[in-house]
Image (cartoon, rainbow over all chains, first blue to last red; front, side, top):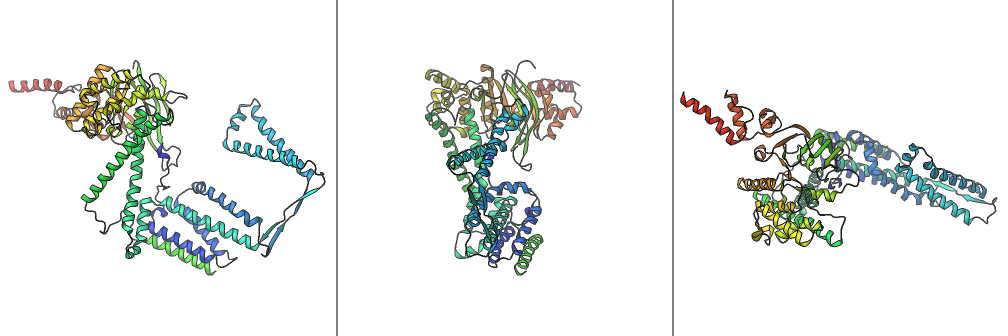
Length: 344
Length: 292
């Protein structure tokens, strides 16, 4: 049951992106952020954005991660970005240069009524279809997407009835205007940059976490943060703490899972019974768990000391090695292409 | 086999079946087995061979990805199956069970299971005291002590008593003696032997060590990489030393010795397997040799 907790989203593999050092990927990501800030200063200059999207596509194809998985992770953000973009589309700045104007469209009430009748009719068919004695249709109805459509149609029908009620006194020949929708240079530019920057940066950070183990990521970060050591910041302690936490999360999860099973096998029940019984079951879970965690922590401290660990000693890295040819190649290629795009 | 108490049919279990293929891991592949009522069987395999996964299907802690598990005539993963009742019937002791103790006294800890079964106070008391005695912890001495100051072997037997107090008809023990010293092991198994004789429960042992279960089990199942690769009476399984080695297992030292002697040309029948049998047999040729 705890196996479903997503602890990072690392996808094991051996692609080019997997083999790059975590530092390289982090540096490229950082560089791209700065690159977008610079690119944003020249309005109506698309080359940097096109190049960034091309870079993203190359990276995805080199990462051996299917586009579908990436999309599944990104679709919520895309939806949010759309919602964020709505004000820009509907409330443009009047001082902008206008690119194109749609509408205004004029609808008569008679037309609107016809549309509403059609919707209601469709909805009625949708509701009535499964009652027909055809078994294929019944299982068809169980489909998730169809149920969603059903709910949407129901909402639409309710709204339609509301509209009919409120406009019942208006003459059928009077019209209501829809629009006009004004598209300005400014809004197109803002939308485009907003979307590209958001999606490209997000997709790149997804790629980073999908192709790098959390431990390598922490090591890479600490190596990049080494300059902070001169400011007497405890970079290494931070790294050790994070590494230990990361290392032990799966172990503790396993232990918790085992405990849950053991207590369930003994008759504990976390979802039924009186509050008193449930609390008892929870105690049966938490007391041994905390005890085990504390014991493990003290064992670990002893083990670290026994191996001669020192707080201010110099540590070696398990995953991060020196840059290879591929790392240098990737970094210089990204730099070359992007700088070229900036001056194009 | 007549009257099997546990049957699995084409049991397959895949961890993270809903994840991408790189994260999926088949733990059990097409397992078909039958366990006779009242027997004591052992499931043997190296770490990661799927033994723990297999036994967790017996009381519904895991659901098969495909296939069926039938315990006591009822299908475990059927809709509306009473899991609570099943878990009382199938008592399960996990690895390092001493880590599951949590109450202030041994008595309260053992009583946890029976209390959740909504038994009467008196019934709980007799069950707990009986279970403690059966697990070799005389209740006069141990009932009111704190479980955390007992020795490792004693704590483990407290956990065993906790399961016994629910009076299960099947007892599943997952590596019950891991981390105990030789004395603790022998002691644990002697109590288990007694439970087997007095209570008539079906015992399922999980182990990676053949020698350990040699005295207790009367049927062995060998798992390797999630496949059921061999089953049979201990005698016949132990005789296949080479095959066992291939699966990372070792036959008990005595069987190994007999196999070696057989290779040297001594005519030792393959069904010899206890120390007494071997001794009586080996002393005969020795006498012959001396007489010559």
